[in-house]
Image 1 (tube, rainbow, N blue to C red):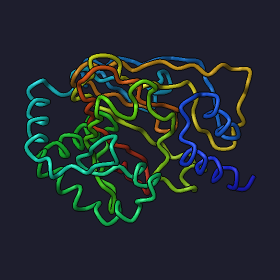
Image 2 (cartoon, helix red, strand yellow; image 1 turned 90 degrees about the horizontal axis):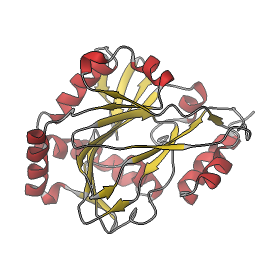
Image 3 (cartoon, rainbow, N blue to C red; image 1 turned 90 degrees about the vertical axis):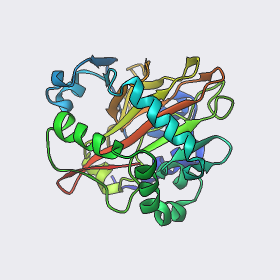
Image 4 (cartoon, helix red, strand yellow; image 1 turned 30 degrees about the vertical axis):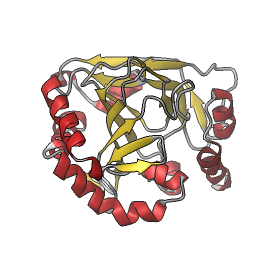
Length: 279
């Protein structure tokens, strides 16, 4: 099979931005695998981590409890409030410390992303000193147990995303998607390991979790319509860090209340012999 159907799939995700599972499955039907729902495995101590890829064969997500302390969170939020000019606005929906490649791509702002990638990383470091290094240590020492973890060259690094409580995902939740942006067609065909990380810094009064389906992009795997797609919700407490395959369908759950949903986010993929981080 040529990569035509794969390119068509990616284009439809970018333009249709589905909010229902039926449309998502129709988009992915030629590259889609559904497995039994296994839910999230809770990790209370980093010393409990064995081999993450193996752990994610047995779970749909990992939830690292209280990775950040309340003091660390308060300091981060205080710093962000003190540097409002460091935030990038993405329309009326949300602001970001850093940049979001997927949003720039969808909004046809790719040039702005590339022009600002290095500077956005410096803004992140200036506002939140030592956070990038802390995330690198997490990946090197605990997640992948591999020193070859780097920020992806030319891309922005980790980011903090601040959703307004009265915009975008209120009432219906965010787009259902896979985190393919930033990966090449060849990476998707080869099935390179790729993971998404979400750490909760501020929770809305209700909901605001991450919905994850038992449905995953697999190149040239035709959808088995006899298996029912199901969703489970990763419910966070402050400081919790979730990790799941970037290729699983997922979305932001409906945000209710008047408090912002604020998350620290990054992606990791194994490229050219290194685990590379970007967002």
